[in-house]
Image (cartoon, rainbow, N blue to C red; front, side):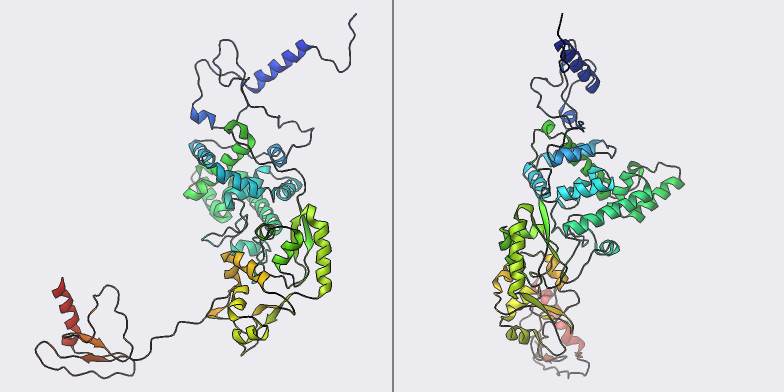
Length: 500
């Protein structure tokens, strides 16, 4: 009598189960069908088994090992596994997806840098997406928008991971002023982007159209949908009349989705990103500069600015702001911030009064004018209006840390600090000084024979002509325009022609 154990499965049953799984998961192809380079880079598929009488597509003995991502019972291996489980947007296919897929795969350094940047932010982004019940593909959208660079800035003035333009940022309550730009703040911009995506999905009821709207604008996509509907055409994304950038938007996301879904199929390895909280948020004390905060956190300054990219100036002077640090540094960081609060040191804001000059304020706070301008992101000829807030050091504050931060702030941050600031025009040429000839005309030798010499403002002095006669000088007029004789005005042109 055979003893039966509750957990024992006969080997024959295991073999049959494995064979059935292989048959249902990967049906054999028609005899004679082969895989070319295009098929290898197309929509991801698992390894196929070989059967008698059928041509092998992938040798199962050489197939890369992988853990099935459909097992929802076990916890995710890492953040990429967690993302794969939430894929819900219907796939798109086509040559453009393959082209973009190859383009990404042919730049492995860029791809790895983009994935590594995303490691800082993905846990928070994925958590928010799951909390709202949205598709996990949206966690890859910052790769398309900004390559996960929070300081990315476009010609259309779109900024941050999610590339908000100023008006859309205002519509979704992202603060934009001379001190902060929440379009670059990871937490604030992520919440706003997901709010926006929810709104445009509710309008169109289709994720393809919602994503196209995120790139092109919901009203523009709405007009194209209505146009197709009026002429009886399909209103799907592929049937719309769209500019090239928007036509490529979904294929880019699909190409990245394919790579993340099965990286071993393309012989690449995604950087390991633990599926755990990697960042902590701490309330910032008023007056601290970002270089000092980075030193307290034990993090290099450039990395600290990647965690806290939303600040336009090198120090924090308003209450209610927060700082993001790696979660394992949070206890020691918080303790040092408490010591900073008790010290009473730090930076503060100074409101410019009518009649005050930047040079006078720099002298009052013991700074060279150039350092005051750099810390506040101003140009040499900047003329800030009364009421403009300047960042100035408190007592016993070394400006070197703030100067180091200001040198690393993006150009968009410096531009924000100059909002509303007038630039002093360059001084005009003094009366009597020769003017530069207009472009396109040959230069003539000043004072030469048969030439016209530029004199004072609105004055033309005539020299002796070739014939030996002296022409009269025209007097200056009140409006600054000179009246020269027709013959005197034509002489330089005639001389220029004779030189050709």
